[in-house]
Image 1: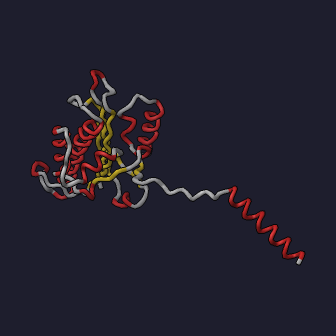
Image 2: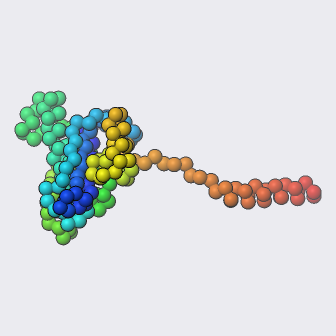
Image 3: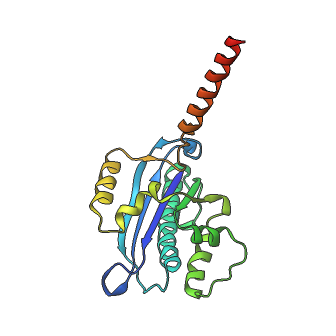
Length: 202
């Protein structure tokens, strides 16, 4: 399965342009169920080719770039594995597109768009031509691999470097066990102890 990560930082580059980052990975199909290993087969970080008027527009541009690169990789792999000429545009590999922008996710899975920005609508429709709603996945920013490609943040860049040494894909946050209420436990224990002492006296 091809899993694509696309992220953007709005108007943080020179001349108010937006920085985008894309990572295309190849991993086992079980990635939708658990954490798996992966291989990086394509990536890019750069400025958006137009000035975006909003975060949604910047995220849509980045997602369209990621979709384009994912489709190209899919066609090439399809030719290698299935002997289908890449120029015919046939894509046999399963694919998943990820974003941490909830507004973009909602737009990508919607049938009817009602955006005021028409150019952002064009980017979204371009993605929808190749991706079904079931192939669009939202994930929290903490799991967005491409985040380190869009910001001047040493911690994010170092985290990305470590991830590149041993790339793994995690699509959902692991559920943490619920913490017990210590105050409630202490009150409950004291009540049970007092009840026991009272019963012993009787």
